[in-house]
Image (cartoon, rainbow, N blue to C red; front, side, top):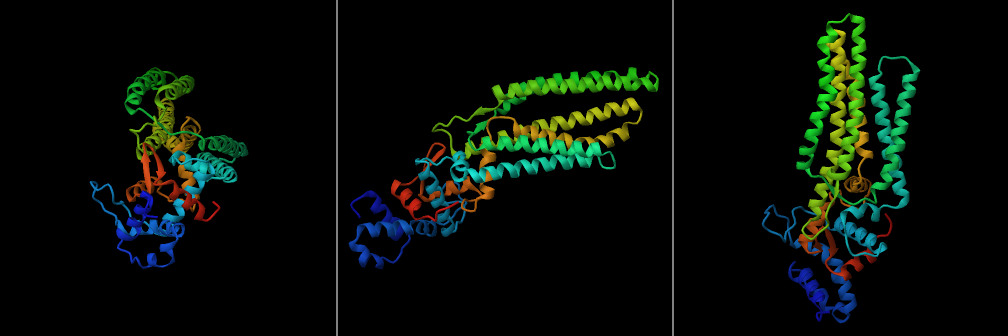
Length: 377
């Protein structure tokens, strides 16, 4: 047992580092190297957690940042080891956790559940916007839009589990989108508003004609602008993360999360602002801007924000963070905060890092955890 570096390391971690009583080594374990190795591997997780207490000192690379329960850690590591073994790999990548630990049946259920929740939100947003109306066509329209959102989002969720992490160049977004946004502001907002003085000088019945023209300018500007922005985003703003040795699991996680937030927030805010401006222009032309702006806030912004949110979910090619978050929310055998957990396991010495990937400290530790973990999940 002590003839190998692994055996010496296990003895040091389990008994010397933790000041444990070595009496069990004097019994039958001392004469059976295989049983002794299993015994040390069984107690390694608990020994390291009890011996290396958490610290808040950022300069200490060998102590964890959080306190962990040894039983939960053993369950989580065993589940990950089993998943990697099933897929015949030693590399633990956070963007593969969703695919490796989620069965096809569970993925289908997640697709249905996420699509249903988004569709329900869209239907409720339309219902809120149409509060006070008694036209059954409005209710049918809300239900139809909710069903479309359910199908569209549910279909996209299935692809999230296969996607790699991505990132967005925030400086490039500000530089490129700044010019596009200025052009859209002139075309979509400036031109209709410039027609307001002329419209106010016309008889009241003709003002609506100017309002229709303003509405057409805004709608066409939104359609053209969204196409330009989507094309630019797909070509330059949303890029696959380079998985090199200089990257880390935490940095790739944060980059994909930032990309997801930007992809959802950009159309959501854009649609909301445009709807507000549309109601403001119509209100000025109608001579009652306060009422129209109030109507825009109550009846217009909710579906606009929901529409932008749905657009952000179904667009793009990098949803690894979303897929991983969905998995962590529904998996009992995985830690809720995966990246801090993996980082602390690396600090404890149970994992080693290879760029953004993790591996178990030793193949034998990997095999032992996979073999002794509770099956299922």
